[in-house]
Image (cartoon, rainbow, N blue to C red; front, side):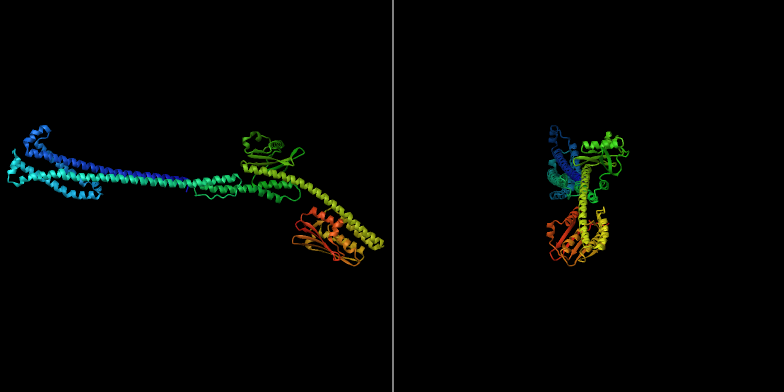
Length: 640
C-alpha cells in the first residue's frame, strides 16, 4: 500500500471518527431536546393544573361566601364572580386539551423507555379520564346550583338544608376536583417530569461514556495505523541508510529486504538494483581488462595492442570515441582510434592544446563542453562533442602520450570518469609492457641466435672429425659420398630461419646418421619414426642433433659391437615428444651434467628461451643404453 493511500486511510478514519461523533452528538442533542421539551411540557401542565386549582378555590368562595369574596376582592385584586367562573372553565378546558395533547404526543411516548415511566403513563390514562369526568360533573353541578338558587346569598346553608341530593353532591365534587387538580395531576406530572430528568441525566452519562469510548477507539486506531505506517517507513529508511553506507564503503553485493510495498519499500528494493548496477559497472572494468589481456597477442605489436584497447572501450559502452596519441619526435601521432574522431580537421593545434592542458593537470576532464567556450572554439574540435576526457600516458615516469575519450549523447558520470582514467593508466602499462617485452624478445632472440650459432661449429667439428677418420682409413669412395652428404647438412645448418618442421629436422638427422655410419663401419644402425601428427609441428633447428650426437659419443664409440639408435617424434595428449634411444654403452645422466656437455646444455638453454612449458629428460645407466627426450607443450609447438 502506498504511503499516500495509508495517509488517506488515516485521514478518512479520523474523519469517519469525527463524523461518527458528530452524528452521535446530533442524535444526543435531538434526544435531549425531546426530553427537555417533554419536561417543559410537563412543567407547563403542572402550572396549568395549579392555576385551575386556584381558580376552583376562588370559585368556591364566589359560590359559598359571596360577601366575604366581595370584601376581599379589592384587596386581592381578584376578578368578579362571573369572571372567576368563566376563567375556571377556560383553565380546565385549556388544561384538558394540553394534557391530552401531551399524553398523545409521539415524542413523549418515545421517551417511555423506563419501566417506571411506562407504568405511570399506563396509570395516568384511566386516572385522567376519571378526573376530567369529575371536573365535567362539577361544572354541570355548578350550573344546576346557579339555576336552582340564582339570588341566594347563603347558598351553602340552603344546600345543606335542601333535600335535593344532586345539589348536595356539589361539595363532594368540589373536594374530588380539588384533589385531582391539586394532588393527583400534580403528583403524576411531578413523577413523570422527575423520571424524564433521570432519563436525561442517564442519557447524558451514556453519551459521555460512548463519546469517551468512541474517542479512545478512533485515537487508538489512528495511533496504531500511524505506528504501522511509520514503523515500515522508518524500517525502510533505516535499510536505505545502511545500504548507502555500504555502497559508500564499496560493498556492492548487498541485498535489501524491504518492509511493505509503499514508496519507501520500493526505494529500499531499488537500492538492491542500484547496487547490482554499480557492481556491474565496477566489474565491467575488470572484465574489460581481462578481455583485453586475452586479446592482446604474445608478440609485441604495439599498434595491434592499442587497437584492441580502443575497440574494447567502444564495445563496453563506457565511451563513444577513444583515441590514443603518442608523442613521437616532438609531435602527437595518433596510433589507435575507434568511434568518431574528436579532432576531425587534422587539428594538430587543438590536439596539442588539449594534450598540454591534460599533462599540466594530470587529466583534463570536461563534463559539459557547452559551458566552456574557451575549449569549444579551439579550431578543429568536433562541434558536436558533449563531454571530453584527456588522460596522460606516463611510461616509466615519462609522458609517452595521451588518451582521448569523448561523448556526444551525454556527459560522463563520475564512475565512468574514474573507470576511463584507470583504463588510461592500464593503457600506459600496456605500452610499458610492450616496450619491455620487445626489449626482452630482442635480447632473447640475440641469446637464442648465439646459442644457435654455438651449436653449428660444434656440429661441424664432429662432422670434420668423421671425415678425418675416413681419410686416415684411405676410404676414398666413402669420403667422397660423405662430402656430398656434408654439403646438404651445411645447407640446412646454415639456414637463417630459427625454426623448422619436425619432418625437416628428422630428415637432417637421417643424413647425419648416414654420415656417422660411414665413420663407425657397420657398428651403427639407426631408424627414424615420425607420427603424421607431429611432422608438421615447428621446432628449433638442430634441436635433435645434440641428442643423436650424445648417443654416438656415449653409446657407440666406447663399444666394438653394433649399436642401434632410434629417433622418434610423437604428438599425443597435447604434448610433442622428440626422443632418441640407443642400446649402447650407456652412462649415468649425472656424469654428463658434471662434464658440462655443450650440446645438451645448449638444448636446455634454447628450450628455456623459446618455450614456457618444455623440458629435457635424460635417463640411462652404464651397460643399459641411454634415452634423451625433449617434451614441448602442443600449444607452443605450432604448425607450419
